[in-house]
Amino acid sequence: MYTNEDILFHIKHYEKELNESYQLLGVLESGIIKGNTQVAESSIEQIIKHIKFVCFFTSCFLDIASSLRGLVDCETNWERKFYLKNGFVVIYESAKTFGKHQKEIRNLIMSDFPELEEKYKVITQNLKNLKKEHKYDKIIATFRNKAGAHYDENFEIYFENLNLIDKPISVKTLSDFSNFLMSVIIFWSDFIDVFKEKIEKDMKNAKEKTNANNI
Image (cartoon, rainbow, N blue to C red; front, side, top):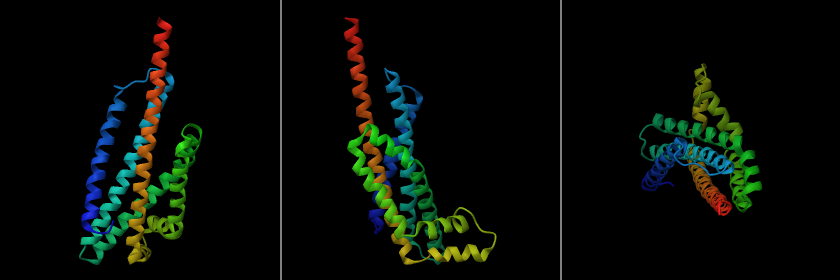
């Protein structure tokens, strides 16, 4: 995702996906759709939570992609620093949020959706590799605390950290993490689809059982 046209294409695509997911979230949270069993109701609540995950990671992707697009067209050094700064903060927050829920998602997949386990392992390993390659703990996390989300009162510290990421490799960092986020979005969307099919099957079985008992 390096040319302006490529980046714009992905931004438009995932902005549409985000709007559709958010609309679905509103429908589900309104209570219009209800499960016919306690298990189905609980599963719908789980889907709502996972749609929120999709929306969060999609917005993170859009922020990074927008930063990449800005880097393609920027004309001044400060513009370049600005877009890199925004991108690095989003990388930090998205990776931190993914890690926070990683164990919970893995346990759910292993217990209820084993067919997705291998895909999930690939994603988690990719994140581990990216964090190592781009020095997440040493550079990205430190930058976020010193010059990204928080401005250090000591301007020298702030400016040194800002200059630390103002390098050509940082564009690759943003691009690599944007690709990772795309894989997360695709996985989570597939996960929700499988979850949805499971709910529909359970609800259908419950309805058939109820009808049989009423005969």
